[in-house]
Length: 193
Image (cartoon, helix red, strand yellow):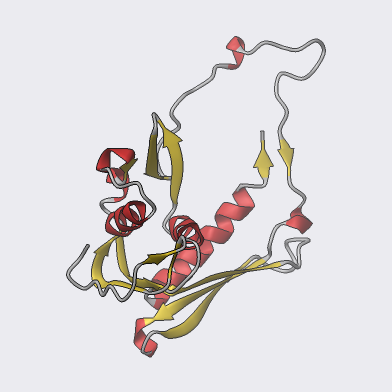
């Protein structure tokens, strides 16, 4: 772990009670590697964080709860997916190209059913506004909130989605950008095929 790490307790019953994980030049791969080791994925060949080596995190801390309750939102914030592959846990960036292409001429029709079906989640079921709470280094690491929203006149939804990442340090501009990315991803994710 980085030199800025303060280790004030240990894993207790599957939960960490306190971790201060670096500050400043900390890499997401280091955080993922650290927690992967804490949940008994001791052997480095059991997980792969190489795709996240270039993602820098200003700083973060983890107070208590299940490790997945911290890692899940952190990966979502930095556009990283966790998947099982070849008896390994891989953390991969979402900006990669699709792994395979299926030509529709190779698809087989089931009776008179359509070749494929694309459905969409109702607009009213997707959040119109997203609140991302983060630790603000310009305000002595007190919680601050970045808001991203769709125009009220352009969408049917009135739902709001709070994302509590007050354990993650973000600059205000980055927090706003990440909030907008997350809201855009939720809206683009309405299509299901």
